[in-house]
Amino acid sequence: MTEEIKVALIGLDRSYTVEFVRRMQASDRPCDQRIEGLRATACLRFPTPFYDEKGLATRQKLLENWGVRITTRFEDAVAGCGAVMIEINDPARHLEYFTRCAALGQRIFLDKPLADTPAGGRAIRQLARERNTEFFSASRPRFVPRLAAACAAVPTPVFAAMYGPLGQALAGSSIVWYGVHTFEMLQLAMGRGAESIWVRKHATGLAAVVGYNNNRHAVVELNRDAWQYGGCLHDRQKAVPFAAETGRMYTDLLGRVAEFFKGGPCPVPPENTLEIMATLDATQHSFDSGAEERLDGQTGRCSRFRSKMRGH
Image (cartoon, rainbow, N blue to C red; front, top):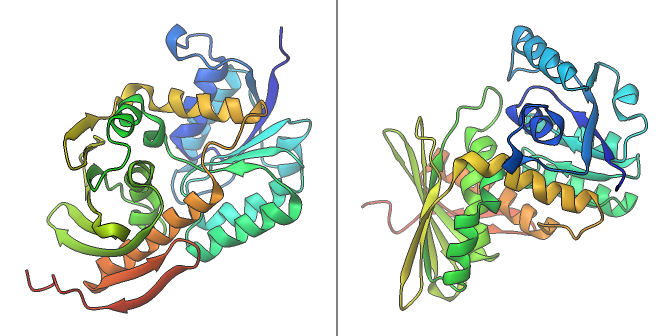
């Protein structure tokens, strides 16, 4: 029997912490959603604007029932671990805790989004290079099977339409915090190379037109209080729609994390994640200004110019 990898969890304020542990080791986990080979041993708890103390206490009790030790000391949380999952809702704190975790010499999963700004994301990438730390960052919808099937059916789309929710961040940008889900799906389908973004606000959220090289483009819709994910991919011959199966998204993502922790390749190259950060940043700026934004996946947001579509 293969020895289980001991996983340290950093953060208790997001649902991912509970749902990942449930699939690793809860006694009542569904048979078809079990992820073998990982065992959460400790979790770092600290105050957060995203969850009150009563809610944290409820989650603490649940994790303790599943054999996870809760601590407020970082050193205790990571002692003896073989891998780390950074599960912090506030992306402004990701660089801080990635810096501490990178010193451990273990593989790291850094839950979405990578950081709160492109600059923070680049700092994480640079630190990982300096410390020779293997890591990846991703969100749940990126790995849903129906999206993968649509991408296989339309491997070189000229147009994509994606939709997803726009949750309300209690600190920082809601577009960066929750829009990352839908932009991850978009990048998987279209690949890197986004060049411009223009955002139109509407009553329940926003629609963003994303321009690519070779006259390709996409539309991303982010809607408040609509918790479905999906889209449609087009090439010159066909259009293939998909709707994400939300009931398995935690399991599908954790399966990729487990493969990575066991020595597998990085599921999402850091260059892809950095471009997503630049895209989210440009979307926020266009949302604020009404202007079209030029962007570069490696360097972040570039100069702004007025869109020809603004009068529409």
